[in-house]
Length: 606
Image (cartoon, rainbow, N blue to C red; front, side, top):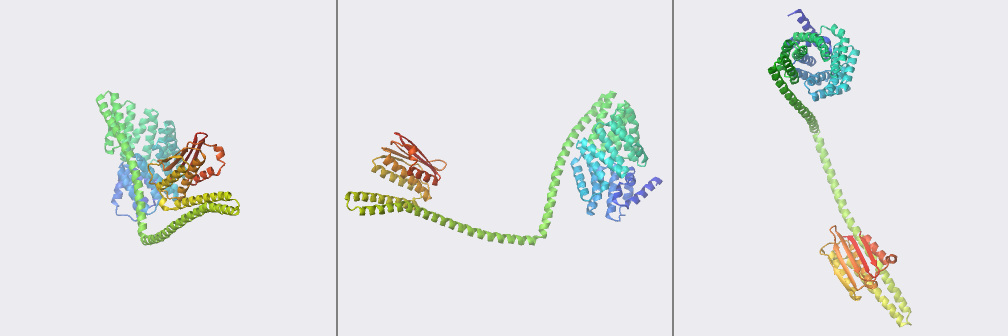
């Protein structure tokens, strides 16, 4: 074993025993990045030598970092996820945040924006509850990367500038250099290649001071080359790409070496050094066969097609153009699949959250099962008692309602007896006293006896109306029509009038409200009396109609002399009729024209 490797392994042994916060120290990062195979070999030989779970988590992190340098991202995700599970069990906030930031960076490289965002939001939430100041700049830089992937470049630039300033203040040189690289990329994304180059040149001395980190030097040279390339200064860009390629090849990295070969190839293409360009581009294309990075392969194929076109090799130009076209189709398809997977993951994440919540609820219910059963029993008892009380109240309410209805009926009967019968009997009593006092005039006594007879007849009619209205046997519309037809025939015969009584087709309708039956009949009776005794009419036409909306329309029309409605409105008869119509929720219309007769129409709900 060489002296250099021995020293590196001793450094690894020293670092493994320290806390996870030391994972960000330059020595450990350089060890995992510069010699990934050595780290994997060493950790593989010491699988059984683990003192505690925290040390095991640190080993998982180191293993994942080594695989990251080798470009094996699936293995990296596997080991970092295992490390995170241990940190979660140990409630190590710093460890969880660091793993989330690192995993988010990988998912961003794979264009899995949803997963990356989810991990960073989780890390930010944990950092708010248990602040880890040393990781705050890392979070800021990762959020800047999220905004860049979301094409919100202005906000991404602000976050990267803030991250650079935070790392500078903390004196964290290694991460400061990384944040400078990220900021230089943002400048180039925004077509600010001059700013990118100026930033890198400004920090060149600092970066070269850390020459022990060969990977960082390679990345610095790559970014310088990219800045020159964007400025179309291809001669200045090529030496930087060549040096970066040589360093990465010595480190044995996969994806980054393939990209560097592509950079060398595309620059030689622009300089029309076609043989060198072809060599590096084909090498990048072959390396990417194992990496399976479609968008990168699409770029290489397009550049190769352009190269062969410039060389005049049309067959190869067409071949790589077809490959480029197919890769573009596959890339578009993968973009759609990725979007679908992100939506599915979001749905499954929400579903999983709901399932976890349901499981917790079931566990809680299981623990308190006895209390729940007792509670249900109490609820049933309370509901039963409440049901009994409500039933008793409803029964009493029904009884009370029937009592109120009976009382209302009694009140109406008492009022009718008082108003109609009482006043008639009082009149008879007065007329009888006068007749007795006037014994010296037989003709005058006879007149009073006739008046007494009329009052008695009126009293009998009123009593008959009251008895008829309260009799349950008369609850039908047909019974009401029969009584009106009978009264109309009697009064018209007595006054030698012709009556045309038209009944509706449907008569089997119940009118349980005695007050409604009585008021309809009394309006009819008052109208018939007025028509027969005062109108001078020869013909009366009575017609009934039932509307589709459940209304009864009663129309009474005569061919008499008519009357002045302004004068009639001052009388008691018309006012009583209007009041009765309002009591049953109806409307009364009266139209009278002198020498052309009178029309009375009542519309009320049945």
